[in-house]
Image (tube, rainbow, N blue to C red; front, top):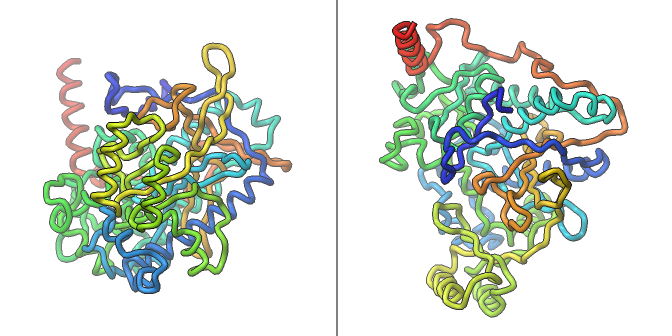
Length: 471
C-alpha cells in the first residue's frame, strides 16, 4: 500500500494528507449463500431509496398520505428547494447507493447508515483487493472468492448510460474538491482506473446552457459529471455562495437536461436518520413488501409520544441529529454525566424535529491481528449498489472498516481505524481478478495532451520547469 501511495486524510492527524491507508492481513469472509440474502436486501433498499428520492422532490405522496411527517423532510438540511421538480436524463434518480452494515445480535446483517451524496470507499475497496491479490494470491487459489469485474463493467456502463439523450460517446469527468479532501487519493485513483479526467470546479464553466471543460486546445462539452463534492457546494449561484468547489449555474444546465450529475444534487436528503423509523411503512407503501434487511429500532423525537418515551428512558439510547454536520451529532447517553444529559434534553425539547433516538445494539466483532495476536474488533461493512436498466448491481464484497481500539463504539476512518478486504466465498470456481481484467473498450482515456484539463497541464508545465532547473 505504501508503494502505491495509498493515503487517507485524517484531519486531526499530524500526518494529515500523508497518513498511510492501513490494510489488515486478515480478510472478512461471508459465504455466498448468506451473501445472496444480503444482496437481495441491498437491491430492495436501493430501489426503495430511489423511489423516496423521486417522491420527495416530486409529488411528495409520502407526506400527502401521512406516511412521513413533513417536518422530517423540511427540517433536514439535505433537502434543497432549488432541486425541487427537476427531471433527469436517467430512468432512476439514485444511481449510486452505499450502505453501512453490521452484524446484529440475531446474527443477520443490519443496515446502520445510507450514503447517497457522493459515497466514498469504492476506490479503497478496489485497491484493497489488488493488494490482497498481490500479497496473498495463494489464498485466492485455495478459496473461491467472488471478484468485482462484472460490477465495475456495470459501473462504467452506468456512467455512459447517464448521458443526455442522443449522446453516443459522452465526455465524462470526475469532479473533486481537491487534495485536502479526506478521500482525495480515491478521487485520483478512480480517475486513473476508469480513464476519465479528474477536474476541479474551476476547470469547468457554464456557457449557453451547457457545461464545458477548459482544456489546452479548446472548450470541450461535458455530458456526465461523477461528483465527489457535497450537494451544497455544487452551485455557488443557487446554493452556497461562498463555495469555490462547484460550477456556477450548473443547476440551470441540469434543468435543461444538458448534463447529468452522479448522484443528482439534492440526493443527500436520503442521509436522513429521521426517515429510519418510517422505512417499514414506506416500503409497504411503495413496494408492498417488508424490509428484507433489519434496521436499528429508532424513535423520531418530532412526535410527542415518541419524544416523551425517549426523554423518560434517554440513558438507554443513542441520540443522533437527523443530519450530518461538523457538530457533535452522536450521543451515547449512558456515558453522559447529569449536566450533559440535561443539556441534551433541552436541545431535544427546543428542536425535537432534528433528533432521533436509537436502541443501543451490541454489534458483533471480527478477528484482527494486533501486535502479534488475534483480538476482536468492531467492524462496519460498506456495500455498494449501482443502477442498471433492469434494477441494481451489487458489488460482491465492499469495504470493511475496523475500530482503532478494542473499546471503540464508533467505527470510522476519521477516528484512525483500519480496513479489511471483504471476501464473498463461493462453492464454485471463480476467475482471478487483475487490475486489467475488465473490458477496456468501455474506457475513454485522455489520448492527447490537448485534452487535459487546463490546471493539470499547467501543473505539469511548472513541474517540468522546476525539474529542469534542478537538473
